[in-house]
Length: 156
Image (cartoon, rainbow, N blue to C red):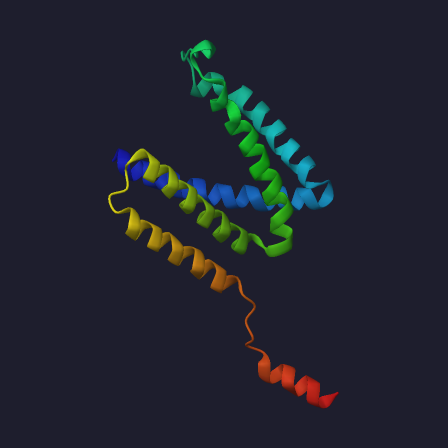
């Protein structure tokens, strides 16, 4: 049951990620990508302030025991939101999402290789290469309207 719940939560998280990226990108069109990122994190912070007593009651964090570099996740998250707010209006939500997922696959695999959790590194690299090449091919401009382009040139 717990595994099914985690799978459903992971899927729901994917839905929320794309939704929030599109909303932040729209906000970025009105103010700026950096402004969109600021408001995203500002509202998120206050939402967590309200929800924290409910979600994390009784949990004590010893800040001295946590290495400082582990808090870089906040900076990386802010950059992530800012970049998405800048990119989505220009190339679209679908392309952005696919490219983000490709980046996640690449970095996730690199981390897994260094952690020793990949059994066949060669095949894994081939698989990632196929994904990246497929993304590149899918991003190329298609010339499906070639007959229409020829007709337009002839009629001029």
